[in-house]
Length: 118
Image 1 (cartoon, rainbow, N blue to C red):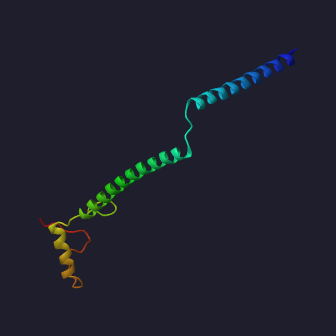
Image 2 (cartoon, rainbow, N blue to C red):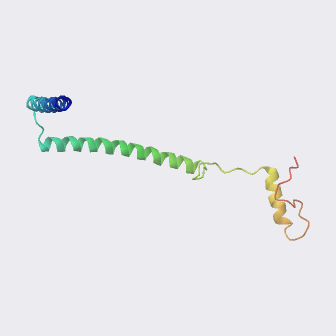
Image 3 (cartoon, rainbow, N blue to C red):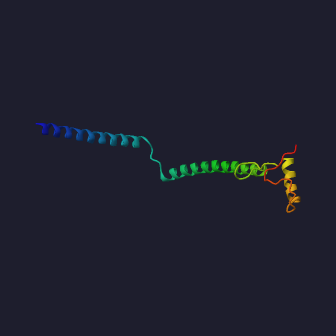
């Protein structure tokens, strides 16, 4: 008796699944008959339009990127995105003193750190 109920439940489940598949197929046929099928040429035209729109957006983005890169280079910013640090008067003096006194042993700035005299 238990086996019969299990078999009956399986058969009902299979019948229900088959009916759902048939209903889905019928709905698809109704949708296709209601809509005009697109020809291959129509699909190609739509694809070409989408590609043209995408190319226009890409060109606009490329122009923006080129302008940003040009502004960064003209503005003195390095590729890493940082601006070069300008030397203060003290740092310039210390660098000049190192060059002038190099090899004499009289270097007023013995360390690599600049001396601030202001």
